[in-house]
Length: 396
Image 1 (spheres, rainbow, N blue to C red):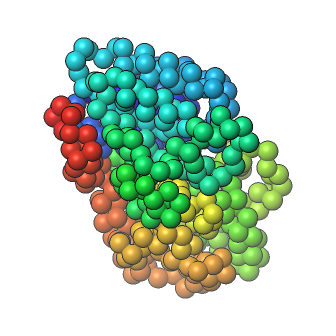
Image 2 (image 1 turned 90 degrees about the vertical axis):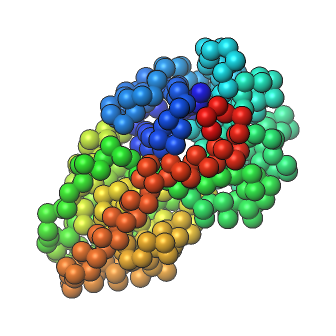
């Protein structure tokens, strides 16, 4: 049995990647029962996905302490995570082998799962999916020695416990981790960030411009490049009035000044967008603008990159390794640029000299990239990971 847990994120947060991973797991291991534990709002998002009909879903209560702040080592949150894991194991039929799949993991959740791997013979392994929280391995640390002993830098330092493995979402992330925590990287596996099967039927070519519709996809953070995006919007709208529009397909960062966002061509959503609202803003775009910042995206996958691939939308992007790898593997899926000035030059070419032949070629390249990231295409890779890492799992 696969016991999957989302003990960090709520509602729509990470719902699409969690759904796509579960789709991949289900296709890879059709003989395994899958039971997902998450809070009610997150389960509601995943229950709406027909591709997950066979996944059993059980509601859990998440700790209210330091919600979303994965860098904080909280004993109260840790006890809740341990209790959740133990209760889930208690509900498994006697003698059945279990793989614990953490869709996201605070340090305390990872430590709790590690302890259960040692203490419960039914647990054949622990697999922890790492998102942006892998950046905690080089981030802020408490001065408290007890908390430092169980934070992410400590957990990933030195030899890793048998049967406990990270699951990284891009090969470039493993390369970066190898420079920081080589033994953790050696024990990690890579499953490229999958596309969500449920969205494929919704994809259609956007209505032609002008105006050219350009979007920043995701939360408006500095790491995502909201500053360069707004700077580019001001510059291009002044140079080419009426020929280009700019959209935020996401929400502002909590507490940010909304004044500079008035340059955009759509009212900014101050709250979390539903996935339907998110897709309604994503679908009309002609280009996704990705001025991703290397300090963060060196150790984090990009949902925006996968959204662009899924929706066959060419991108203009900085050459952070996760993006450079995608271009190297899939060819002309947009413009890979050395800096923001080069990104602006690429965008200006699209505005002033449209190239329908190249647009069609890019869409074809994106279709091939999307096919490579479909759950069905990744299932064999995941099945091989499980067979190699967790041979005790029945049917692996």
